[in-house]
Amino acid sequence: MQIHHITRRQTLISAAAAALALPQMSWAQAPYPTRAVTLTHGFGAGGNADVVARLIGQKMSESLKQPVIVDIKSGAGGVIATNAVAKSAPDGYNLVMLTGAHTVSAALKKKLPYDPVNDFAFISTVSAFPFVVAVRAEHPAKTLSDLIAMAKKEPGKVTFTSVGVGSTQHMVGELLGSTANVELLHVPYRGGGAPVQAVIAGDVDVLTDTLTVAAPHIKSGRLRALGVTSASVWPTAPDIPPVSATLPGFEVRSWLGLAAPAGTPAAIIDKLVADAHLALKDPGVQKTLAGAGSMPAPNTPAEFKSMVQSEVARWRTVIAKVGIPLQD
Image (cartoon, rainbow, N blue to C red):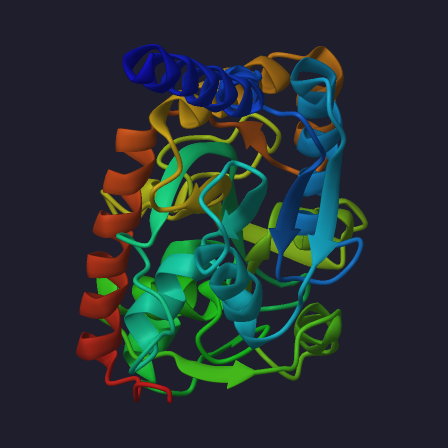
C-alpha cells in the first residue's frame, strides 16, 4: 500500500510539473516578434538618420507584423543612443540605427562606454551616400585640381568647414588634405545650416557635406561642386566628377545601418536581415532614399562588422597623421 501511495504522489507531481511547463514551452515557441520593436537613433528629428529610421521602420513593420517605434536619444554624436541599445536586453526588441559617426567616435574618443564592434550584433547597412566637395560660385577654384594647387601654393590658407570637430564631414576634409598632401585649415561650426552659409558668404573656402545639404545650393548656382567622394560617378549626381578622378583611390561613403545588442539570438538576427533587405527592395523606399542623395546598401552581418572594423582603423590613421587631439 505504501508503494502505491508513493507512486500516486509521484504521478501528481509529474502532472503538476508538466502543467507548469506548458506555458513556458508555448512562450519559447512563439514566433518573434510578439510585441513592438524599438529602433533608437541619436540624432535630431527630421535629420537623415531620423528620416531613414522611420522609412525603414515603417516598411519592416509590415513584414514583422508588429510596430517599429522610433525613439530619439540625441546627444554626444550618437553615443548616448548607441550605449542605451548596447546595454539593453539582447532579445530583438531593441535596435539601433548606427551612422558613419559610429566609427569616427570609436577612432576619436579616448574611451567609449561600449565596444564599437564586440558589443553589437550587426544586422545590415540600409543606405549609403557620398559627400560633396564644393566652393561658392565665385571662388577662383574651378576644379578640384585648382583647389589643390592653391593649397600647395599657400599651405594652411585654404579653409574647409564642417558641422563640428570629429564629425564625418571633418574627417572627409582632413582625408582630402592628407591624400592630396596639402594643408587645409578646418573651421568647424555647430551643425545646422551654418557651414553651407559660411561657404556661400565667402567666410570659408570649402564645404564637405552630404548631397542632401549641398544639392539645393548647387542646383541654385550658389555653390560649385568640385567632386563627389564616391569611387565613381554617383547615380543621383551624374554631373559631379568623382574626387578619385583627381586623387586616385579616394573614396568616402557614409552610411546608416541596423544593429542589435551582442548576444541577440542568431535566428532573430536572420529574420531582421531578411526583413531589412525586403524593405530596401520596395520602390517607394528606394525613391525616398534617392531623393536624399542615398542608395540602398544591403549587406550581411559579417560584411557590416568588417566594414566597421576597417573604418575605425582608417579614421585612426587619419587622426594620427593630421594630429587631431583625442577627445574625452
